[in-house]
Structure formats: C-alpha cells, structure tokens
Image 1 (cartoon, rainbow, N blue to C red):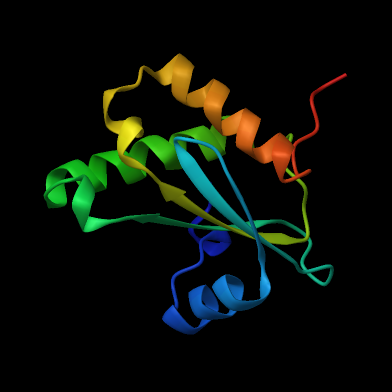
Image 2 (cartoon, helix red, strand yellow):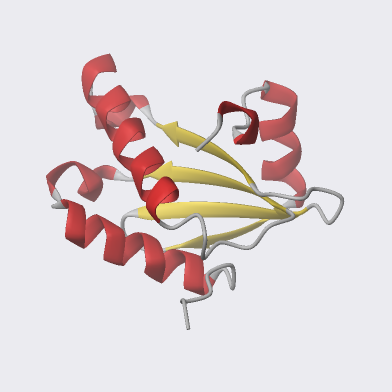
Length: 115
C-alpha cells in the first residue's frame, strides 16, 4: 500500500468519523466515506491505547496494513476507510484476521471477490 493512499491528518479523520458510515464486527470497526473524485481508496488505521503499549499497537497497525495490502484489489476505489482494531485482534492468527477483515468489508458493501 503506497503512503499516498494513507489518511494521516486529524481533520480528515474527524470528517470521516462525522460524515462516514460505520460497520463493525467483534474485531474491527470500519468507517466508510464515499469519495467519487478519488481514483483509488485511502485508508487510516487506528488502535486505541487500551490494546497495549506502543509496541503492541504498532504491531497491530502493521498487521492491519498487511490485510489491506492483501485485499486491495477487492476493495472499492473512490472511498476513504478508517479501520479501528479491537481487543480480540491481539490473539488472532493471520488467517482468522483475514477472514474477519473480509467479513466487515462485505458488511460495508466495499468488498468484491475475484471472479
């Protein structure tokens, strides 16, 4: 995932939280905001302090970033996503995380399987 496709600014996060639609399962919360003027999607990842110290939070962000990279061809372009990791993510295998990520993105109607 290219760095230009990441959401970093606090104002952008706030706008997506306020105007976007949220979808959730036990492991993730995803906020989606339609941005038809964009040619690709953008992603912001957040992990709360309750999940652990900085090392744990950064490892969790890397794992979520890898999920996005693996599934980027199936995600809708022209949207901004904020992905919030919840506590159960810490104890899950990569396969289980991937399955949960696909589930929440399908709930958000932003995931289209390869044909």
